[in-house]
Length: 289
Image 1 (tube, one colour):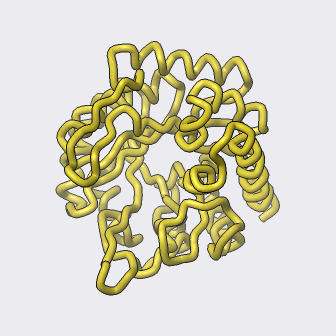
Image 2: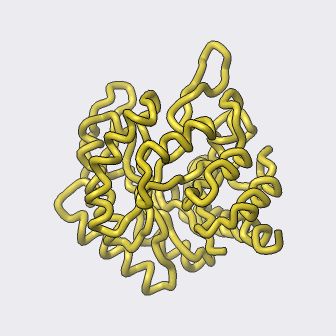
Image 3: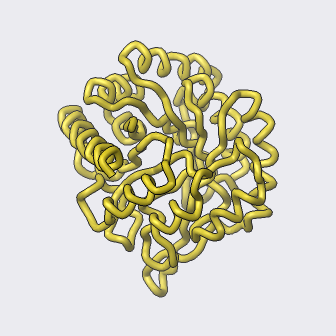
């Protein structure tokens, strides 16, 4: 079982190029191409923020090629990517094809593209139908992800696109294309108020599940912490993945762990090593299950 992790949190301190190098040095097999800097919004206004990042400018192709080469030179590959979000913002919607293109250039097989939280399976399918011909042309599968909203009055998550196992399956069936698959966010599936679990999600999605976002939480909030640090039952999760004969990569998305515990280069390198140990522990559990 190969292990991977997102690069956004460590790149905030190290930059993407060094982040990939350090993941390889720590023992990760792969890296998840975080593309949030391609198009970031001000959440208070839903307006695009100015950016000088290479992904948002004319040099995005050269930048993606450079990251791929750094990975390959150090024995690590790009397994998947994460497109910018939320997809309901027109300027971000316009960048989704660029995200797919960058995924292909970097060598990734899946590009995670969030559904619109508040649209039905049929409504979200329209966006994915629009993107699929381009994705197929570039040999990249689109993976949708289970989302959540928040009920402030009851202080827990509330339903959103793909947040329930039946709705997740409905989204996949509405498109019904082999280039449209599932990325299960383990932490989202375990949040209070969504009437599901990671195990239920895994067993419902079956062979449509081709990618993961792995992180821990208190089974209430979207904490994005390192596995084995909080309350998710990892033996149950890994057992369900084994039951469906999951063939993808174990990809961490414990970005909050680094962002809240590591501010210096030395601290980031320490936490990359800790993330690698947690990921390998999960992979070993899967192999032994």
